[in-house]
Length: 177
Image (cartoon, rainbow, N blue to C red; front, side):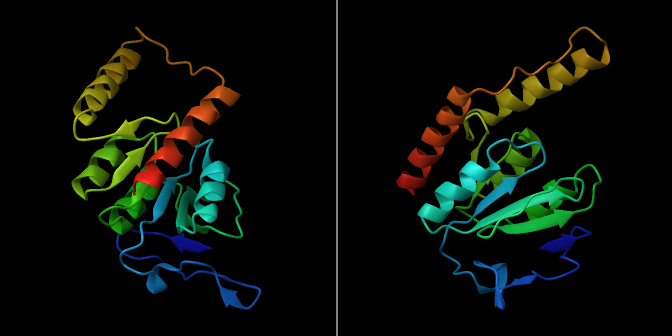
């Protein structure tokens, strides 16, 4: 597990499991392999993403704050401070061109697009240069509406169909790359 406290570098290194360093340590990765980053706080598709990535031998980095419990024998788990944007800063600082990011955070998605990454939401929506401005505008309008108490956001319960839509979109994206 990596603990990360700031914007620039992790404060500790990966833990050893069973005497060997966990798979796909960032310092040992090949530069040309697509990595999958998961913005894990509140993400319902972490385990499914890890399963699919493992089948395709793709490295996965799961970034979460220390308030969330998560373990994986395959993925690298990075634990960041609980501050508002700590996970976003970590991810933004470690993404490279052609990496894949799983997130619902449109601000982070915009940063990832600037690094020429692929972004997929937990609902299977591919975020691109063509739809990011619309998504950011909708986020801004919704924030303003919530501030004026004219709208209350209530998310519907996730269904098995939602999980299948995500899985299908992720498989399609991984096969294309």
